[in-house]
Image (cartoon, rainbow, N blue to C red; front, top):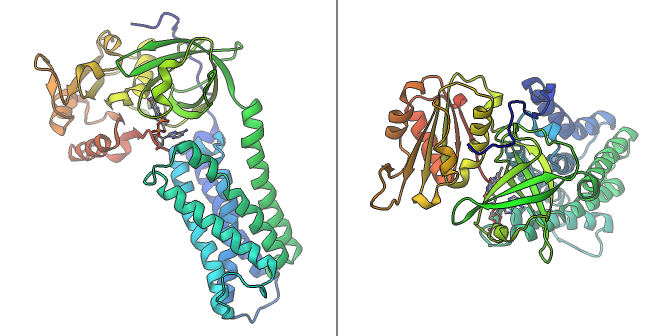
Length: 448
Ligand SMILES: Cc1cc2nc3c(=O)[nH]c(=O)nc-3n(C[C@H](O)[C@H](O)[C@H](O)COP(=O)(O)OP(=O)(O)OC[C@H]3O[C@@H](n4cnc5c(N)ncnc54)[C@H](O)[C@@H]3O)c2cc1C
């Protein structure tokens, strides 16, 4: 067991009311209120109108579309108070869906107005410049949304895409000016205050994320060691520059930015693979799989590491489970290893089963440590392309394997699953076929 500095007391995040369902529901209600309020206010604060229905619809789309656009900035800001009840992945999925919704509304806004007025030119000299500003905003937004949906297919580097995505703030600025100058619905004082409030909120958050967080909002660590786990997976041990401990639940993740001489400094999400019982250091176990991770073995002790943490809800700590079934594939073992280490260190005696799938024996991460766990933890390895002399299970993790190795606990166990996307989709189906209810299946996708 490799936990020399571990002890039974852990530095965990303080349980807060923001973790609960009531806070989650309040956030949803607040979001709906802020998104729809401009339309409600516009109708409430103005004299009765005789405008054509299309024009009315167009204006309503513009008002709500702009509100959604500014709220996008809030969703993308990684505020812990917002992600705590849902998990960051859920918040980011919602962010994507609402981005498309805002785009549709803001495209409908000029389309309906143009149809109502019968002026079909995209840009013309007769059109007031304030209206053209709005059209430019919609074009910027459309390009950004299409790019956000297609950047993977277009094989655009993630960092370049992220940088360009920030250009959406230009659409917020142009949309704000356009509305203030031309929108008749924004003349009443109440509406002007609301419009300003949305704008100031969006700009403040952009400044917070792009100025405050990089300068003061990250934990400062140094790389203490780089250890090879397999031929392509490495564990970085990071030690804080001061005495402060990052409080985290086992299974949570961080955004890690390494400062290495001669290399661009990029931020990437990685699970904290150590246990919160380990004082004085935290670990990230990283598989070489792309531009940045392929260089992870070139990290050296002393390199600076800036962390934003903790994030995520993938942890048994949120559930009252009488027994635990962990299923991992490849480097998806990292959050599960953090949980297993924690359970071991606090001497939790619940029945625990771990089924771990890999391609070959040399791909098994943490193999030695996994073979020395306490008696209540049983570990089953499954290899899809093993050498001939492999004594263990062959193939993929299936319902039969789950039943055979976790059968006795399946009735009430909570299941924690992390691995490649296709493996996870397949195993979720297999678990359902074994009558494991969705509320007992928890998973982490390595994508946000
Ligand atoms: C919650 C979470 C936990 C993770 N934990 C681990 C872990 O413990 N060990 C591990 O090896 N990997 C982990 N990953 C995956 C890891 O973040 C990616 O492998 C890494 O970012 C790929 O970067 P790259 O430049 O090497 O590859 P690229 O080929 O450039 O990127 C491959 C894909 O990774 C994603 N990605 C790249 N950069 C970022 C970024 N800055 N932010 C978000 N996504 C990005 C994008 O979907 C991209 O298409 C985790 C991912 C998430 C979301």
